[in-house]
Structures are given as C-alpha cells and as structure tokens.
Length: 437
Image (cartoon, rainbow, N blue to C red; front, side, top):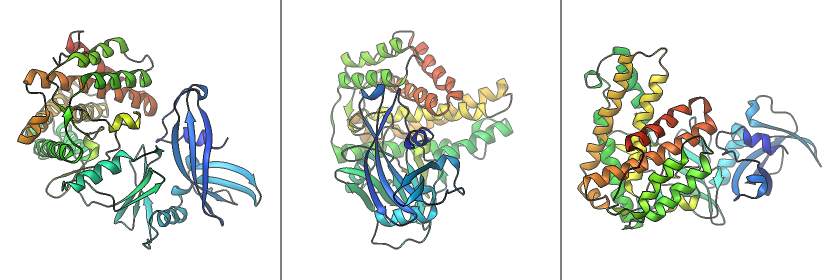
C-alpha cells in the first residue's frame, strides 16, 4: 500500500504499534492531469484493535514521475484506467497547492503560495504573503480545538489571537482554517534562543546582555493570564475535578511512555489529585503552550495553535483543566530552551551550564511575575501558595512526560533530556509526589 510508507515518513504522523491502515474516503477535487484528491485514511494500532485515528491527505497524481519533488513527498506509482499514475503530496507542488487553496476559499483569486516551515503536526501554507492556511492533518468528527477556541476568544473581544476568516469543513469536521498572516518580531522560541546565544557568546549574566529576555518573559506571562481570564469568560468556569484530571493523566501516561520512564512513580503523583482539595477552578485552556506558540507583535504577544497536544484524544483536549497546566507548559519551555541551547554548544563547560540555569531561572521568574500581575486570574487558581506550587509541579511532570513521548517519536537521540526532567521532578518530590491537598 503506497500510503503506509508515505505516512510513516511524515513529521505530522503519530506512529502506532502494529498499525492497520484503510482508506475511508477519496474525493476528486480536480480530474485532469495533474489530478487533485482529498483522502481520508484510518489508522488503528495493535493490529486493528485500537481506537481509530483519522488523517486527511491532499494528494496529486500525474502521468510523469514528479522527480522535482523531494522523495519524502512522493508516494510511488499505480495503474489507473488512464495509465500509470504517480502519486505525491499535492501541497508540496505550487500549482496544486494553489488549486487546493481555491477549493477552500473559492471566493478569492489567490496568486502565490508557499509552504511554511516549522509546523510539525499540521501543514501551513502562506498565501500571497498575506494569509496563512493551516490544514489539520489529524481530524475528528467535531470542531477542531484550534478553531473552536480562537473563535470563542474572538467573540468575547480578546484580541491577541488570530480568528479564522474562513474554515473549510466537511460534515462536522474542521479540516482547514484561513487566517491573516501576522507581522511580527519573531516567535518566542526564536527570540529566547537569540538571548541565550548572546549569554553564551559573551559569557555574561543574562541581566547584563543587550538581548536580555526578562522583560519579554514578564510581558508574555501577563498575556497568558489575560488569555486565561478571557477563556473563562468565553467557555465558562467550573469547579476543579482532580479525579478526572488524574484519570486523563494516567491514561495518557500509559498510552505514550511504553516503559521509558518510571510509570509507577509518575502515576502515584497523578493519583494524589483524586483526593486533593484547593485545586482552584477549571477552564478551557490552550493545552500545549510553549514559547514557540507565542508571536511577538509590535506592542504585545499573540498566542496561537490552540489544537492541544497531538498525542492526546480530542475529547481530552477539549475538557476544562487548570490554568496552571498552561503555566507548566511555559515553565518547561524555558527549561527546554536552556537545555537545548546548551546541547548545541560543543564541549560546554561548567560556566556555561551555570549561565544556562541562570537564564532559565531569571526568565521563568519574570514570566510568573507577569502572570501574577493580573488580578482576575487569581480567582481561577488554588488559594494557598503551597497548593499552587504543588499543583504546578504535577502539571510540570505531565508536560515532561509528553516531551518524552514526543522526542521518542520524532527525535529519539535527544529523548534523554525530558527523561532527566521527569526524574528530576520525581526526585524533588522525595518519592511521594506533590501534595495539592
């Protein structure tokens, strides 16, 4: 089957054990050569016994082998009534990608398209250097959280998200969203990396460097808090349910780790939520917040990619959770940036390790200070400071477990970094786990 090796080679595909793949639907969007097709593939793990995962693919077909495309974009050839047909990823071909854009938004006449780099779980196209079309590769029967949340935030007047101007749907499934291309100074992870590189090059404390990131980190913390207040207004606020949070964490733990970490100790930490009190409130959250999901615009930050962690079930991503889940994602992101930048240095010495730690601590504290500066967000959090710190630690552990699973899938050579973070969080707990109650 041509689709199986093609899917396995894609960054947006989540591998499953012993997969069974079936093509569930093919729509022809353009019949003449080169043809354009929309395909839905169902993947089930464990020999077909596991829950199905659906992926959409936009494929092209032509009578001649598209040798100008990279091998990862080519599926191979197959016989058809019109003769031999070569199949390929249509979004890697400018002509067919533009044809697909016109299918999504037939009311406008677009002239140019290019692929956007850096999107792993989805595919994004820049159109006429003014618009971005995101194709959600993994689909479900119902609204995509990225569409649902940004539309909800826009409806209550929160301005620092990009609300879709067009959503392409089939039935109840959101398949693609067209948004304005935001002009910016860069993504948070890029700006943070510039700051870290200056610290390493000068071998100076972060506060003494021109690209010190702490003011940016504090501003970002404020923006995240304002987003949480708006999410509560848009989707409602409810009492926290630690039992449900623990159940979701445990289920995800056993789905993704496969013996690579001490699951028994991690699960014991999660299970404490089931009997804890003072957990604060539950709201709809971003679900996968990190520095690379924040865009620095002229006077503030814009937050994007509200789809949540791709490895989690859509139903779990849509369930209300603590705002501290997003805060934990950001705290892990600061540590990841420092660890990753240090790993890129050839033969780092102890001075650089101390500078990396100082950078992470300085900017994490600035972020938390900015977050705490928004009065309205405190009503959503645990009331006692020890309870907040303990709950944040649980979500940090959950985020680190997700990082282990992601790196094992996409970059196994660096999976030891989040594994060490999991172990550090467990060791700091002293073997018993954070105590939210």
